[in-house]
Image (cartoon, rainbow, N blue to C red; front, side, top):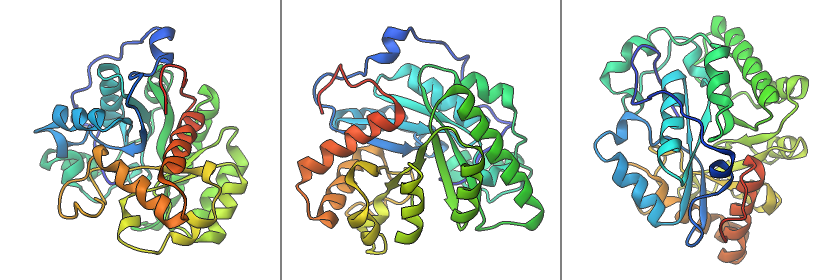
Length: 307
């Protein structure tokens, strides 16, 4: 993803817990075929047609993991997961939002500049409440982002990352990692602190880096960028199929043939198809395995539906 704020509330009413039965039963018994492991339909970019976008994903047979990037977008992700049976939530504080950051209007709109001018201090109590929610399936996106790093913010990113790893350990839920230009540092922190596994969102490293995360038990997820470049073909070909996930990272990195448009979860079949093409394997085999991978990684019961 990209930016967020703590001074403006999205549509994030009080969190309401579902029963264990409701939590365990995934929505659609027929027609569910795909899992978008990382999307941001709660962002301002969807304010004008959020319901229609979510409906298109359901019509395409896509389960959505709506990922928070700070306090309000995390709460909004949980709210959407409460409202829609084919949506789950991840909650966390993105590393760039631990301090002054790039302002992304797709995330906050023009009103969010006050937040991105200063960032957010990680509040364990707030995130713990969201993390314990039955519709929350992962902690994040969290990690390290050195792309626009200022030296005095590096320590804050590391401390916030460790705090979220400890939260994931506490609630026994997987991590949704955001790592940019910081794979070795992030892996060192994970090895020192993590008792859970998870997914490396929007993986952009080479095969040598990929092997390190795979060996440590983390899956790698890929976006529509694989329809634009061959840079990740080696990793996709060499990684075990049961260690791959598909994601849109919507509204960003729209896949071919929809370049120039806002991305959305309904496009996830294009990414799955491209993974199958790169690997030279049957589409149905790849689709079924990626779906099973997501259920395994995020601990989602698969009894109510067929892949």
